[in-house]
Image (cartoon, rainbow, N blue to C red; front, top):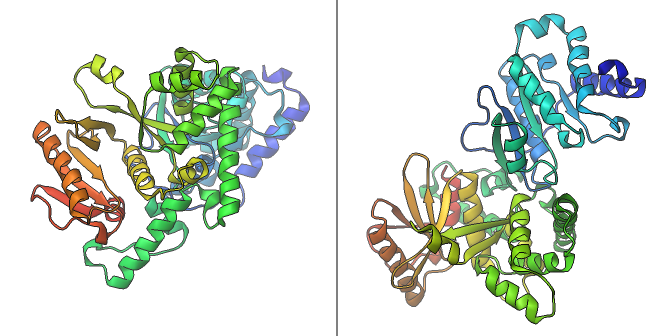
Length: 444
C-alpha cells in the first residue's frame, strides 16, 4: 500500500523521520516510574491524564537509551498530530520502516531499533502496524497518545495482550522539587530546622498548586484558568466526543460534584436522586457510565471499600478523588481550607504511582481507615491521613480506627501521615508509625 502513498505524505514522513534523528533531544524534568518500563515482546504504552507529561517521558526514555550507548539513529520518533499527515492510514506506515531501512541498512541488521510513536491514535488501524513490528522481533515500540482514543482498556484490546502499560501522573512531590531545582535531603530523619521549614513550605505550595508540569510557578489566576481548560478538554474530548455522550448537563454536574468533594464517599444512588430532585433527567446507568469514562481518562480516581464479599463491595459507596490536588480549589464551594482533602488526594495518587492496589477500610465499629495499600510482594500498609493530629481528640479518633483495622489486618503496617512534623499526635501506640506525609513521599 506504500506505492499508493501520495507524494506529499511521503515527503512529510521522510522529513519527520530525518528531523527526529538529528539535533538535541527535548529536555524535561526527569520522571520516576515504579516498576518495569519495558517488557520483552510488548509495546510500552505510556498513558495518563492529558498534560501530565507523557510526551516528555517518551523523550526521557530516548535520552536514557542514548546514555546507555544506543546509537542515535536507533531512536526514531514521530508525532502524528501534524496537519501534513492528514489522510495517513495504517497501511502507509510501512513506508517509515522501508525508508529507515534505506537510510540505515547496516544499523538495522545489527541493533534493535526503538520506534517512538506519539499521538499514534490519529492513524486509523495503527495497532495492526505495531503488532506486525513486534512480531518481526527486531524492534522495540514505545507509544503514547491522547486519552480520548488511547485508553488503557482499548490498548489491551487493540494490541491483544502485547502492550505494557506505564502510567504517568502529574508531578510527584519529589519531581516537583527537582523541577524547581530544590535539593532533596538524603537523610530525612536528620533535617535541620531550616531544611524542614523549606521542605514543608514547598510541600504546602505543591499541595495547593498541584503537579501538572505547565502549572508549576504560575500565579493563582493563571493556574486556575489553565487547570479549568484541562478539565474542559477532558470533558469534551475524552468523554463527550469519544463516547458520544449526549447528557452533557449531567456530566458537568458529576464533574463538579466529584472534584468539589475530594476524598468523600460517592454513591451513584444518592447522586442520581440529587440530580432528579434538581430536575436533571438522567438514569442510574448513565451515571455509572459517566463515572467510568471519567476514570478512563484519569480525571477522577475512585477507591472501593475493602471486603471479601463482592456484593458488599458493590453496595457500599466508593471514595472519589481528583487526579491532582491542584484541581480541588477550582470546584470546592465550602469556603473552608482544603488541606486535609488535598493531602489525602496526594497520598492516594502516590500510592497509585507506586502501582499499589488500594482500598479503604471500615471497621465493624464503623470507623474508617483511609487506605489499605497492597504491593505485589504481598506487603500491605494501613494508612490514615490527617493534616493535623496534634489535638488529643483528633488523635484519639484517627488512632482508634488504625488500631481497630490493625486487628483485622495484623500483617499490615500502621501509618499515620500528617501535614507537618507539628501535626503529630501527642502520643501514639507503639505499633503505629507517625510521619509527615512529605517524608513518606520522599522516602522511596
